[in-house]
Image (cartoon, rainbow, N blue to C red):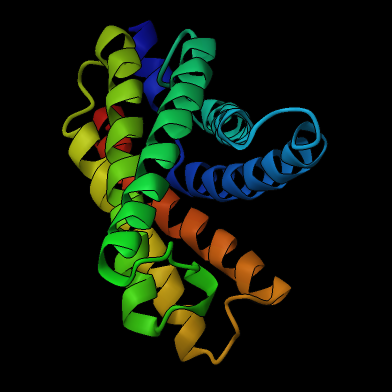
Length: 206
């Protein structure tokens, strides 16, 4: 009975907005953390720390939206930190290695054409989202096993969100390399990712 009462508190709009805010705040915090650390640590360590910061902040925001679904939100924060930390590094490395194989130099996303940038973001999103989904699924399996297809949804949702946000920015005529372009990309990605991942949670809460 308690679980049923808690389930009714899940709100898709709240989850979507918290996911968007968490992604934006996480990336901002990650960049701020990476600047001073970069002076004393090597690039690989800095990358790992920055991506973990992004995941921790995103996880904290999302945990607030799961207050009616899971009993131990700290596990969600930890899983999201690990999932984003590992997944984002793997996704970026995959794109860089593919770019070096094709062109001989690592690609600079801001200077890619519309199609290649979208394809790069599909790759990063699919890898990051899948790894994140696996990490979060471990928490859901223990606390909410009625949430279905989470790994598949996360991988597809983040790939679609990154790709669509990139394409929308180009269609709007905004330069991706500009501050407005990057902020727009983060906000749009977060909203799309939150909206697409809300349905398995909403179904479990029904």
